[in-house]
Image 1 (cartoon, rainbow, N blue to C red):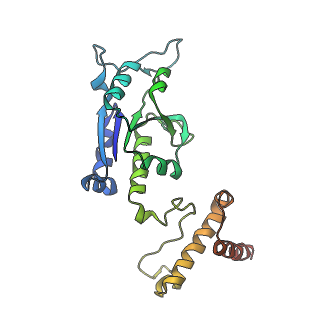
Image 2 (cartoon, protein in one colour):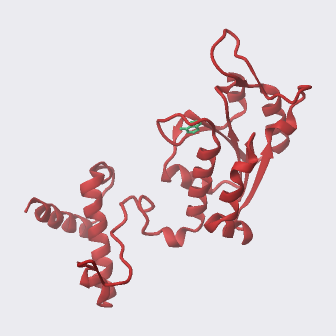
Length: 237
Ligand code: ADE
């Protein structure tokens, strides 16, 4: 998969792209990530990419010309152009799974007060990472790139929150007792069947207690129904 990120602030991505799982995925050629500086595409003689809004108002608006030219030069037949904006579709794990099957993503990061409305005509999808307004699309672009990369590394995510719709069960590491708090003995007894049952039940419990809305959206298996009944009784005591 190839991800082209159009930004006015490419250095914001330096640490993000070189560290941890993203850094490894790039090294292993699982994903190719390119940073494109929007300023390189402006034809404005002072190098500007933005201007004041018609009709007045605070701040500056990204101009059509550099964005149109930049996207035109990057877009291929199988590209999906995504605009980062608080007005977009709210990003979640399902959207991440839809995006991971694409060969080529072009992510457009805004800055300043917004985009010239005509830019929307060359965009395929608008994405928001939540109901809050950031100063630019760079952090949202990192969030969705990180999440897509997580889906690529699917194995380690099989039990992670939301990947299989439930919240993740509690996790522990050494020592077995810390300041009087003990690791549940079932996790240390080596019985894999019991361990899997514990993980499923505690995932269900977390979801029931913290995100009951997720339970309503999914059809439970027979085993999950039995476990959920037990949990409801236990939590009432
Ligand atoms: N740009 C500014 N705020 C944003 C948000 N919440 N999501 C996506 N892009 C943004």
